[in-house]
Length: 93
Image (cartoon, rainbow, N blue to C red):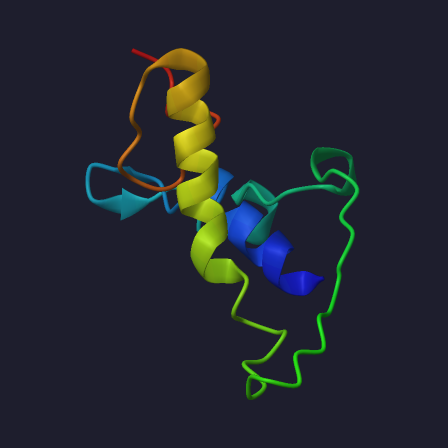
């Protein structure tokens, strides 16, 4: 279950902010991470495929989540976001 949360954090919140070349959110108290209220209910399903070798259930799910979120944003509002994090500031124009 941690992998979808890691990807959600990276694609929507995680960023290092700079002002005149200096890091402005260098403390955890100023670094935005998802809270429990930001995360939807997640159901994890492990599929036992006898015809394939194990690929892991840990880091593997991270790969596809950010592109899926990006495609969903594009389908919803017609704006293609090409850098992370995509939100909350990504849609401001």
